[in-house]
Amino acid sequence: MINKNLIFNAKFLIKIIILLSILYYLGTTLNIYQYVPIFEIYSDKVIILVVLFLGTLIFLDISLELIRKFFEKKGELRDYPMFALVFKYIIWFISGLLAISLLYRGIGSIIMSLGLIGAALTFALQRPIMNFAGWVHLILTRPFKINDRIYIKDVGMGDVYKIDTMHIYLKEVDKEPTGRNLTIPNAYVLTNAITNYTKGSSYVWDNVTVTITYESNWRKAEKLVFEACNEVVGDMMQELAEVWKNKPRLFTRAKICDKPIVRIKLLDSSIEIKVRYLVDAFEWADIKTKIIENILTKFEKEKDVEIAYPHLEVIYRPKEE
Image 1 (tube, one colour):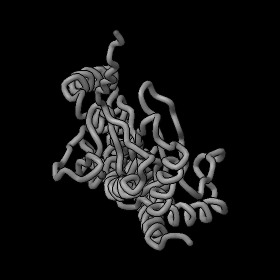
Image 2 (cartoon, rainbow, N blue to C red):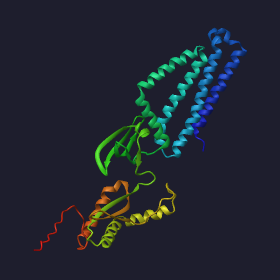
Image 3 (tube, helix red, strand yellow):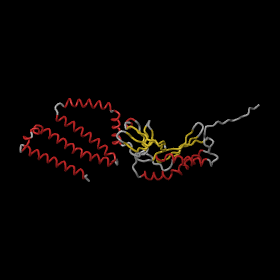
Image 4 (spheres, rainbow, N blue to C red):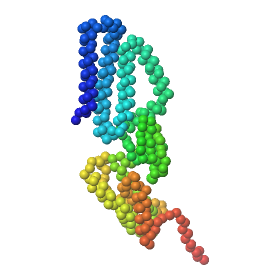
């Protein structure tokens, strides 16, 4: 459906163009311009400026509508006003340069002066320009959006709650909220690696690792660790598996698991049992605590399963005479 405002603006501009054309025709036919010597001298330039002005308005009207539809399609309409404002400034600046080049013959010196001024401003405002470029990159590529949980290398982890032309604002998270806010220049997204824990789905893989002694019944320990994890996240993983089986995923070759996965590794003085499971990125700490509590509860009931820890064992053997 065509936007009503676009139709109204188009009709309005067409009326202005027709009116100006009529006035110009009447002025030329009735020779009115001879009574206004200044207009007669600069009539061509005035017409050029009017055409350039109306052309810029028409171009902005059409292009802004297309840009608005683009943002609406991506579900990020809240970013449109700021982007539209910057786009308008750029187009009007270009239109102004064209007007100057059409009106003045010595445009070469003007362009050179503007170039020198622009180079000086670019050097002086290097950081703000880089931040603005980072913001444009965020708007176009959308590596993350508001409410996503992200990690920026050498900065930290947090939940995004605001993005403007200069900065990204995060509520700092270290598995759990810390209460601190992080203000990060947008230029960081151009040079630093970004990990998004919630893009596409808020579920990520996490793990709990337990080490047991070599004297322990490792088969029983493996079973207990799996049961302890499955009791906490098993139902949720089965529900996710059913959903993802019939839904296109970001990584087409990603394996769909409906239960926790147990891995075993031999260490120098113990056996490592690791259980991997899916968890909501916003519930990491709570779920991990519940799984660990469940494991400890099950282990303390067993006599042949012992958690390994650093210790020294002394074996005394009396010397035979």
